[in-house]
Image (cartoon, rainbow, N blue to C red):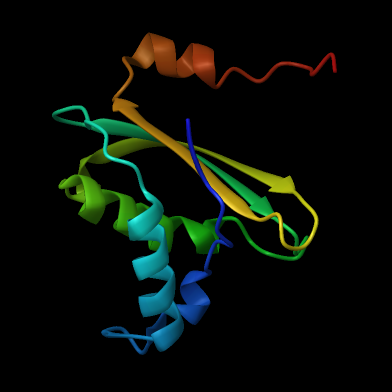
Length: 124
């Protein structure tokens, strides 16, 4: 997974209305895009794995997905409508240690997707 040390930005802070990006989003996007390393994306339908390290325990993980996903898609030259599967994880971190981790793979077959997402009791 690729890790970027940046505080994720909520979609609630990214747009004015439906079409105008905020200055905060423009700054976040520029910083994130600059930090994303070069890498090859798979062709066709994709699966994305996202982990958000957040210091705010009240943050909703789903509000973070769109801003990050759009930046990843733009940086690596694909349309986010090619993402058919997603695994999202939210982790608590101390203030100043926020991050985003991600990987993009080929869309998994139905059997592999079910195995990946089987609900099992954690033994940790």
